[in-house]
Amino acid sequence: MACCMRCSKRMKICCGVTAAIVILLVVILVILIFTVFKQKDPTVTLQSVKVKEASLVVFPVEVINVSLGILLTVENPNYGSFSYHNSTAYLNYRGKLLATAPLHEDTLPARGSLNISTTLNFYADDIMKVLDLVADLVKGVINFTSTTTLEGRVKVLNLFKKKATSSSFCDISVFVHDKSVNSTCEIDVKL
Ligand SMILES: *[C@@H]1O[C@H](CO)[C@@H](O)[C@H](O)[C@H]1NC(C)=O
Ligand SMILES: *[C@@H]1O[C@H](CO)[C@@H](O)[C@H](O)[C@H]1NC(C)=O
Ligand SMILES: *[C@@H]1O[C@H](CO)[C@@H](O)[C@H](O)[C@H]1NC(C)=O
Ligand SMILES: *[C@@H]1O[C@H](CO)[C@@H](O)[C@H](O)[C@H]1NC(C)=O
Ligand SMILES: *[C@@H]1O[C@H](CO)[C@@H](O)[C@H](O)[C@H]1NC(C)=O
Image (tube, rainbow, N blue to C red; front, side, top):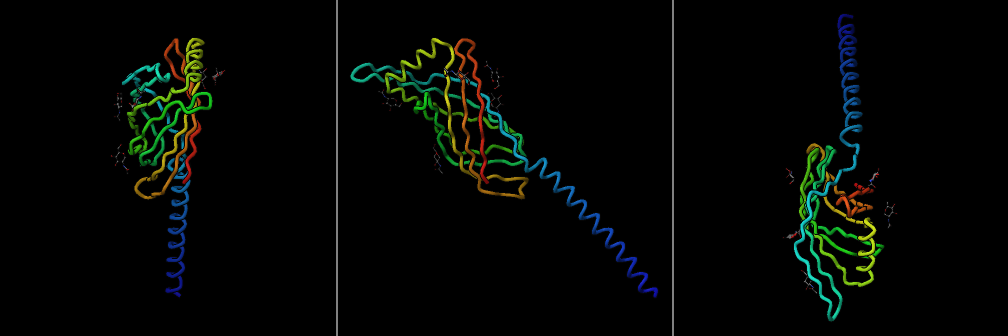
């Protein structure tokens, strides 16, 4: 009798502790889902642009050879860091490839920022493309689109590691007169 009472008491305590642990786990899981695993889009800020090299060859072919050194700051609001491999960013103008930029392998830290320095190499080898650019320059707004695919690995709190591919597609408007840039991006992360 005494044994049984103790048993049931122990069971009650056991049940209570188990329930508390389950509730705690559920609470932790909910917090993780709403904070850690909920992806927010990183923000990208253009810090500086410098002309590295510019040349114009008119004969035998019209070629404008321009390289721009750019510095971007990417801020990551997520709890996961992202390490990516070497890649290339593509800048398109009126549906045609205008410039490429190599992206060196790096790590975007969790809840931190990363400075990316790269060179934008222009392929303005088509005279029509150049004339269109000049016309837009005069109008004051130049629209570009950019596409970048980064392959790498996401790591959350040293617990969760997974291969990931991040694809971004951006609409970029450059306002010539006030030297400002407006961009909207769609970022798609596949885990
Ligand atoms: C354009 O620049 C690239 C890299 O700097 C160089 O390899 C190429 O020869 C240049 N082309 C012309 C026509 O100047
Ligand atoms: C990434 O590119 C750099 C040069 O930009 C090169 O030194 C390095 O070996 C490359 N890494 C891989 C994994 O290809
Ligand atoms: C990135 O560059 C900006 C401007 O040059 C600088 O203020 C900032 O400290 C840099 N951030 C990192 C993480 O290196
Ligand atoms: C550039 O993009 C903006 C906004 O996306 C749009 O309103 C504008 O018409 C575009 N201009 C040209 C010349 O395509
Ligand atoms: C830049 O984009 C934002 C949001 O996409 C928009 O509200 C703003 O009017 C744009 N600025 C210009 C100068 O077009």
